[in-house]
Image: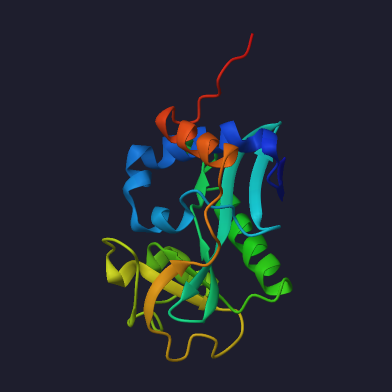
Length: 188
């Protein structure tokens, strides 16, 4: 049975391994990664799907601005283990994440992804044409879902992280995780 719950600190190595399997090292070169780099995800909207104690899916949301002064969340990455796909786990993660974002009072969610997949959750490129990311991105893949109708009317400008990067030990751990792709250091 698959359970969706809040991500825990102990899930991090399994989540990183899942993301590496799903996206490889190219995930660190994506423009959306610039918005996540060294930052903490939005409180209460980092989810994992587990089955028999194993992390088989993950999704996180991050605080961003959709142009000047327009608060939003950035969704991603969403990933499901190869052997757990086609069972509705990604759909369940998306639905739960959007419901939590709405419940917390967030007005809009952005993501970079395939419109045919994300369209069923209310995402489209209709209101993202005047927005851009900090780096290369296929503009037709920048999608948005308004949780509050009209929240992205007239949105334009740079999509930027709205929370400062972590410092100190957290930043070191983030860098270590990238270099070692989810491997956890062993202690004596």
